[in-house]
Structures are given as C-alpha cells and as structure tokens.
Length: 84
Image 1 (tube, one colour):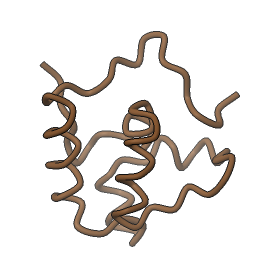
Image 2 (cartoon, rainbow, N blue to C red; image 1 turned 30 degrees about the vertical axis):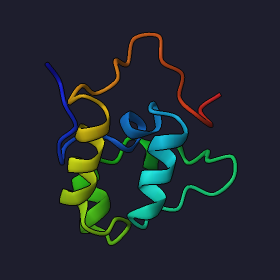
Image 3 (cartoon, rainbow, N blue to C red; image 1 turned 90 degrees about the vertical axis):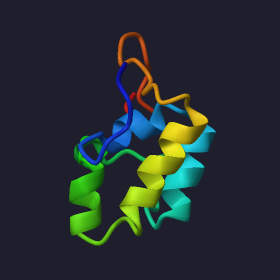
Image 4 (tube, rainbow, N blue to C red; image 1 turned 180 degrees about the horizontal axis):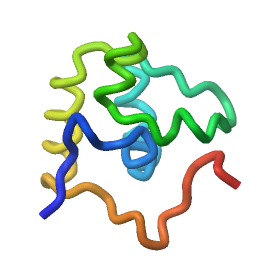
C-alpha cells in the first residue's frame, strides 16, 4: 500500500484537502490564498525541505501517515487545488 514518504509531492499532500494544507502550514510551507504555482505543487517534500520551505519534514511525513492510515490518496480522479 502506498504511503507518504520524503519523495511524496506537495500536490499529494494537498489532495488531503484542508488537513493537508494545515499540516503543510504548520511545518512552514505557506500556500497562500488561491495557490496557483503549479511547478511548486510537484516539488517533493524532500526538495521543499532542502530549499528551506518545510521544517521537520520527517515529523510531517509521520503525521501524514498517522492520520491517513498509511495510505496516500490516489491521483486518479483527484483534483489539484488551484490547478484549474
């Protein structure tokens, strides 16, 4: 079963809806209103942390997996917030 890892993308977290946005914000990733920077959505959690956009990325991954039963959301049929 898939789960969130350091190589999961920001867009994967956003597919969790408000919970994903809140967790990203709590770990230093500020999406702003109407997040439309499409390229940033496809940045991995590892890359975001390396560039200083996320704090304590390991804790973020743990929290994502705890509240999601360890299963990352499926990209099939999922809409991308701010992606049109």
